[in-house]
Length: 247
Image 1 (cartoon, rainbow, N blue to C red):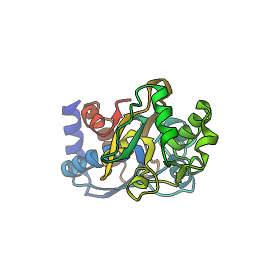
Image 2: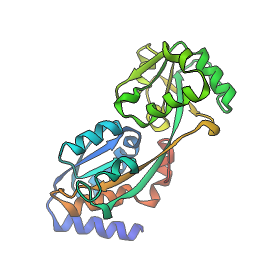
Image 3: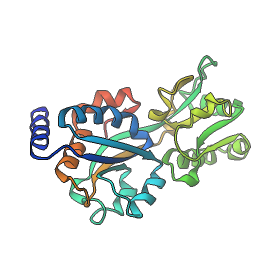
């Protein structure tokens, strides 16, 4: 696989002038995309602009006809665009993301390895930040459903800090919340925040993120090679370091 990638990188770099590519990605995959893209740029000479958002927001942008070369969103939302906006044959699973919890750096770390401990930590929180389900964020939709499932939705309603997009953990930094729930990859690495860990396995929800190439890409060879780099099986270690798993 490594030899194939090197040959393809060389082919793209040698057969086409360096162009700008546009990558639209769901926020959970962005931390990994940044590093993979940096390596891609060095090897090919192409420049990639990365723009992120909630899955719902990206769906609207793609549906509205916005130009992009590669998009990364979950498979089900992507399905409506296959064959019209996205080349169906290009679609590849890239990573899997689970929901985690973060708190303020230095605060007592709760034991959330089991459902009872997780529930206790939530009920003890002053304010809990998570993505507004109405914005189309995968983690926010699930967290709201989970609160209902756990029977604590009413108790947490007044303590919920709904974030329209971006990093829920930033609400801990600015003092508006003391707990954040989001995809683990979006909680890790936020300055001033401590990643507690993934929520209990019995309550966990994993989201698959897939990539696809636009049928309207102006540099299809480069876009194909970018997607191949994102889908490289050797990305496993990098994905893990960013709070993601191989699909």
